[in-house]
Image (cartoon, rainbow, N blue to C red; front, side, top):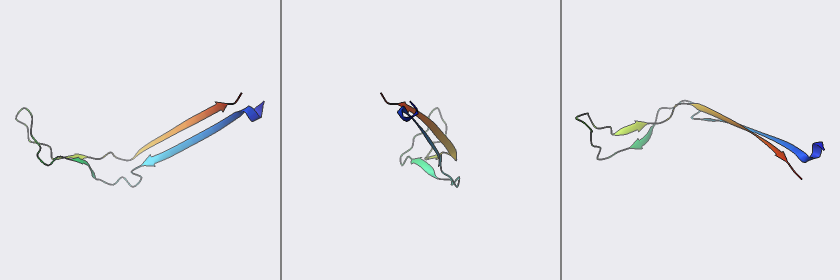
Length: 58
């Protein structure tokens, strides 16, 4: 019975050194509602993720 089950784990880190970077750059940016245009959007800070997989084989 135990041979029919399997378990998988995964974990990870994006931007492990928390480097500041531009995720998206707009060359001809336009402001909305009288605000200044945004020429770049900052990238994501460090973040973590993980998952668990449980499998049963018939």
